[in-house]
Every structure is written in C-alpha cells, then in structure tokens.
Length: 180
Image (tube, rainbow, N blue to C red; front, side, top):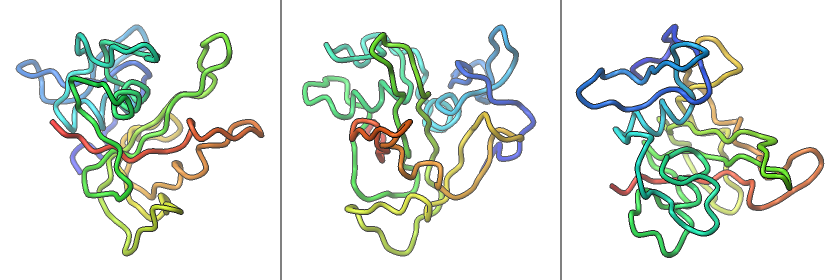
C-alpha cells in the first residue's frame, strides 16, 4: 500500500505516471504539488501516462486523448474501441478499478466529478445483481480527507446512480479491469 498516508494533497488535474522522470504520482499545476484520484489509482498504479493521443476517439466521447474516469468508462463500453485498455467486469478482482463517472448538465458542465479507487481486498461473497461495494477495501486519493491517499471500505461507490433526486443508470459505478 505504497503512499497510503502520504502528505501530498489531492489536487484535481494532477498526478501521473512519468517513466524515467520520477517514480511517484505527484505532479504540479497552478494549485500546487499533488495527485487526483485518476493520477494515483489509474495512471501511477498501472503505469499508464494520462496523456495518450488517440485514446477514446469516438463520437460520444466526453474526453479524448487523455485517460480519466470518464474516458476510461467510455472506452471500456465502446464496442468499436481499437486501443482497448479497460473492460467492464461484473465480479471484482484484486487490482481492479472501482469507478463512477462525472455527471454533466445539458450545457456539458460537470455537476459531479467522477472518482476511482483500486481494489485491494475482496469481500467473502459477491452478488453482481446487488454489488456490495462497501464490503470491498480500496485505496483512493480523495479530496475530502487528509491524508489524500487512504485505504478503506468502498462505501463511496454505493448508490452513485442517484444525484439530486434523480436516477440514471449511466451514472452507476463500474468495475474496470486493465487489459494491457
């Protein structure tokens, strides 16, 4: 569980895998040195640089050429994807990514930012029809806690298909497996 409890903060838009530069996820932007959830769990843990020209190039893409929670889900669910990095699975395995997408308003503005954590402990039984995300243990980099990188139960991924009194299956949590 390398970096659990590290002092570097969550900063949206930071964190990456940078081969040959430094083997830590922290990167800098105008707000400082840190990592966001994808920079830690998706990019650094899997050694997948965030910027990937050609990734998720499709008509319904909200993000292309970069990997984040939204583009990873979109690519995993796009039948015609040619550069497949992720696939959706219905049963978790150690190292899978627990991901929910951003929610966008009619104008395309994000109303809720997506989130990802990496599964580090499984529960005894799993029912794909009623996923028990709260029984999984995940490591995540999150804005609401200090230190930002923490290990704990996956309760934050429960009921993510609901937002402000509305429900949409597109907002649900997915389990993504890296297939590279």
